[in-house]
Image (cartoon, rainbow, N blue to C red; front, side):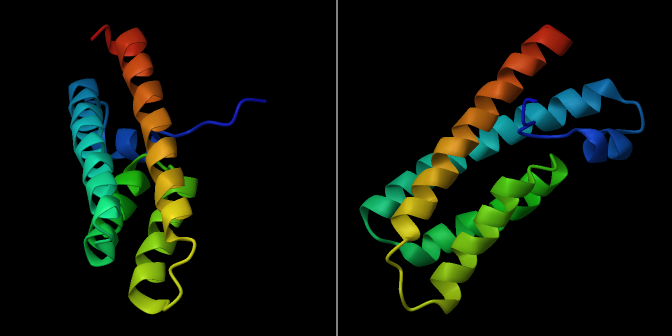
Length: 119
């Protein structure tokens, strides 16, 4: 059984049948999360943990709309690690995983958008 990276039920409920809205939201998600991943990579290079926590905080709600629960939980974990944990030994591993899995999600969304909406 293939693990779904996301679920559109919540977004479709909000859209109330408006497929153009869903397509718009997914396109915006792809753009925003791509930028967030790039920002995290830059902040990692300069060890700007507070900025990483800020990006992780934004990602929590973005992943919530797609029911990407694993990525949402990882974003919360990263934010909490930076804000409340003096030991940041695992932060690079966590942010790297978040970036890798976010890119996988983005690629899957692009593929599904192309197939479903013929983008």
